[in-house]
Image (cartoon, rainbow, N blue to C red; front, top):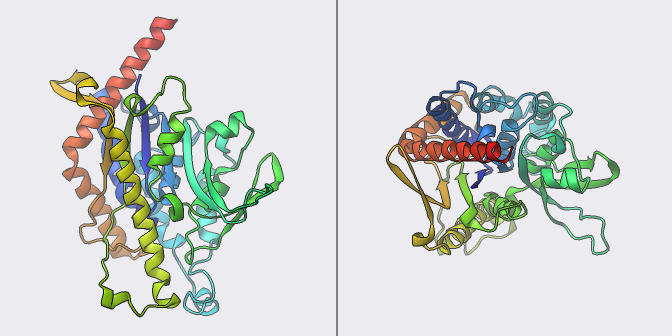
Length: 361
């Protein structure tokens, strides 16, 4: 049985783009399965995300709501401008972002509270992998800052539970944009974390998700997995030696954040390509669906194009929101055949799983 992973990168308001791609995938699942109620949570076994990707991934597996792909992206279309809004007082007190975060976190917290309410990590309907970075440390003897991966498995088995709205607030606390999040475990208020955006360590959480998947029964390596990894679009900026040779702390401040986030995603893709290549093609299982042959394992990385949308994490002008939605729809069209293949694999795997379960009864 193939263990199926959906992984979504960070990228602020650019989350609209993978959100729209997943609207297309979900529509294909509905049509191909002849089930108008089909949703992403029916077909993937583990949902991973960093920052904006964590919010999207969590929405798909929120119990009682199980946001459809369209409802999840609507959070961004309807609330993006409110989340990334700085009133005149914020602009004055932050001294143009030099003295304080660019935005108040109040609107982000409101949106997360309305979307996830009292839902806890342990309540999610599928396994999870959400990335943040704890700058305070874990309270141990060494007390070192460290990446923190929020998993449903740990919440249930190891009693490390958190409210979803809190951990998502931490995963999306992008430095200079939102203040760090101070959150506590549900069952242990004294155990707190001071979190910043997971993008500083793993903007693409695929490698984290891969490692978590290995903990599940029957998953012994990439040969037992199928991974769909979605980026949020990039516009990599290059620099000449003349550009940077006289930069000091101020000059490097913003580029360094952008470079570290982009580089971590590139490094994750490098590692995943190497991991996938360890399985000989001749040894891969093959299945035929509608005369289309698929190889398993499969690692599918889609890094969408921006198609004129702004690369900024926080451009929520009406024009750019429109451009981001259009870019998402355009990318879904460009990757239509690939999404078709993925939908067929997901449906085949689900049917095989249901068949195996019925044989065990």
